[in-house]
Amino acid sequence: MEHMSFSFSDTIAGYVTHFNRSEKCFGIKTSDGREFQAYLTPTMYAWITHNLEEPYNDCTARLGEMLTPGQHVFAYGIFYPQGDGHKFEVKFFIFPGDAPDIYRHEANKCAQLPIVTSIGSSTTPKIQSIIINTALS
Image (cartoon, rainbow, N blue to C red; front, side, top):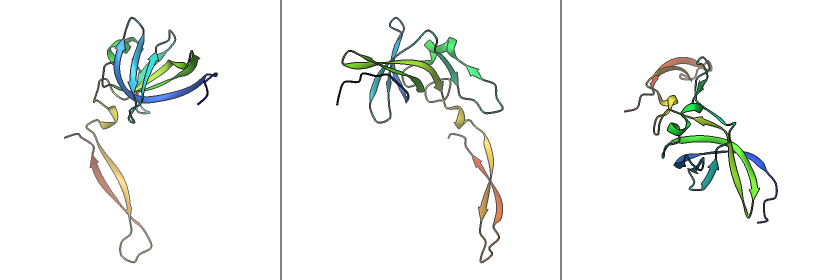
């Protein structure tokens, strides 16, 4: 592979492995085992996911608390060529929850979903409702 001589943007989804406050960097490991070193920038920002009817949930001021080992994160940034490799500078974060192993989309809520089924030889589908409990055991 040739030396990368251009910059490009991308999103890395993975888990925080460590956070170094003095260096303003953290490690992120993807589900397939690749590890990246990422650097914070002065203009970066962060939020926790929210539903459409909910307000924006900014957590930029809590970033030191949010970047704990095991925390799942989506980090969007720019890869810059540096020496024989690259440097990944994060521009924004999206956290799926407030802490490791907490995901807002797995909240203890029930959703009623319509299910379309075909009954016998009829060509007219019958709509039934079922309740799906998304609570964690």
